[in-house]
Amino acid sequence: MTSRLFKREELAVDPLDLAPLLLGATIEHASPEGTVAARLVEVEAYRGQDDPASHSYRGRTARNTVMWGFAGHLYVYFVYGMHFCANVVAGEDGVAGAVLLRAAEVVSGAGLARTRRKAARNDGQLAQGPARLTSALGIGPQHNGVDLVDPASPIRLLCGEDVPGSSIRTGPRVGVAAAMDTPWRFWIDDSAAVSSYRRGGRARPGK
DNA sequence: CGTAGGATCCGCT
DNA sequence: GCGGATCCTACGG
Image (cartoon, rainbow, N blue to C red; front, side, top):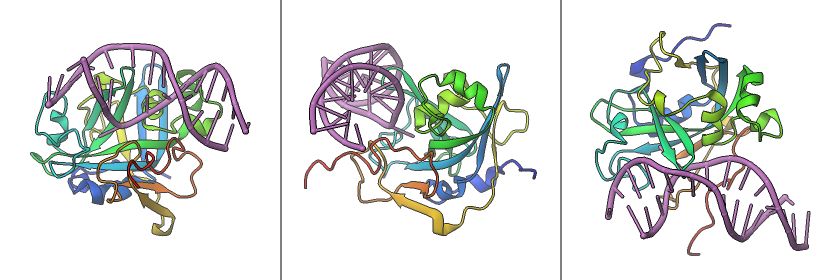
């Protein structure tokens, strides 16, 4: 079965609408080391200036510039002094929005992914978590701004089989205290690779 | 199974 | 200076 690339117009929608559409899609990175492809099973939406948890909340900065640009580009950022996380930029040009890629199942190139993810105890953990995902796929800061819908790009976003709505779950974002009341997180219920780390978010501060 | 603490540094207040 | 869209290891039950 052949998968086609996403079209930019399909991604130029509100992050909350795009997020569930990315479940089941494939992200593929072809590098000199080899190619790793993974099926997305967990994502989170971040949006504009009404979302306190979004990097774009306080306006445009050097770091978050890509979030404000055209949909279909990759937004890569550095966190916790050692990890990278990757997002698919969503929405119209000039509007900030992105979908964080939280977890995926490696479907191709597992051998290379294992060498990049020495600590993984099984293949389900290779891309189980946002920083694990970038590590398994070999995504780094040099890929910030890569166009995922360009056939010539090293990293591309491919359509997957339709995921039945009945197997999609939603909930608050992981590791984000703000906006706990909004279900910005989407995952495929029956996937073994959905991040178990602080599943469902951090312990509620109050109550 | 679970929780706790450390690693490590850039971006923003 | 502070804290973060995290992960790993160690250790207790």
